[in-house]
Image 1 (spheres, rainbow, N blue to C red):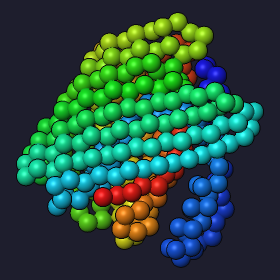
Image 2: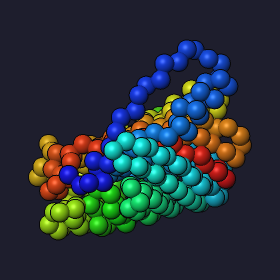
Image 3: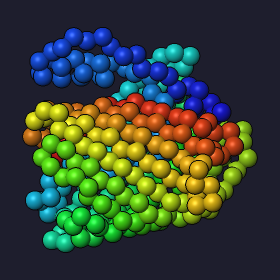
Length: 276
């Protein structure tokens, strides 16, 4: 296992809290997540769907900028900074999304980083069935991924759309190119065709609080029973018209991980976002 995975992985203790009014609950959650927390390596599949579904389709352009920070001190001192930006354009018929992320991690004065760029087009997005195409470039030094490039497409079904609950499913195919080189491990390269299916649910808990849950199932057709499984859950609080606080948990289990890469990884992340 890479040294960075050992240094960064940890657990989060659940706080004991009584029932509080909404304002008090928000303050409590802010305190819980702003206090430095141990953070593990990031999940391998990106949460694209929830970022898009929150956008106001009455606008031609929408987006957000997010910034996060965490620190911990156990066997080693870990500091993590992350930032992301989302930009969505809604045309009369089609929509296009660009998502970028950069994460900087220092472990005992050693700097590692990861990031990605994701582009996606959804056509006839107001209909129940919508075709999509997407592409992505990604790297992650902290768990040995030197390069991931993918290109794919599929169909999206907007299953349920109400003011308080939204659900949808997307399924398709993608071609994935990966180069792995974890520490003290040989270079490994993969070129694979995979099926990809995602299920997203969004619930409006209060006028200013939303819960997003998304799950992914990605597998090679000849190994459909040995997938890469990912689940993300995110709680979002709208502090003001322009400022939002988010707390996210992500986990991934890969039935066929590269050599010297662990099968199961998870991460906790919190951030403040500027929404426009």
